[in-house]
Length: 86
View (cartoon, one colour):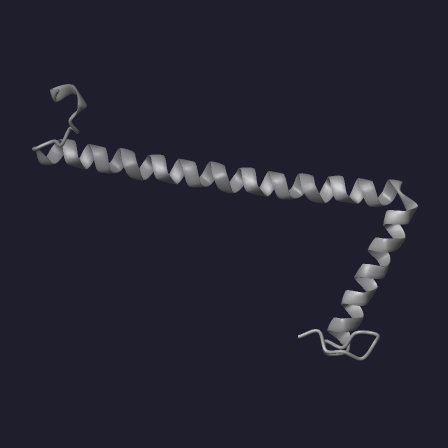
């Protein structure tokens, strides 16, 4: 049963080495995850741009949506029908 028990080092040197290894491992994981999220967002933007560029129906919908959001932002949150969005 001793195999399944957690190893807790008693000396300070082993604890410091374990702490340094844990910090480095956490830093590397966060660095890699951040890079992967950035790559995924960039891929989504590129794929969305290609879809909009290739399909005229989607292009007109995207233009209408972008203009509506810009008009709402420019006019202080009012939409075309006079209702406040928020």
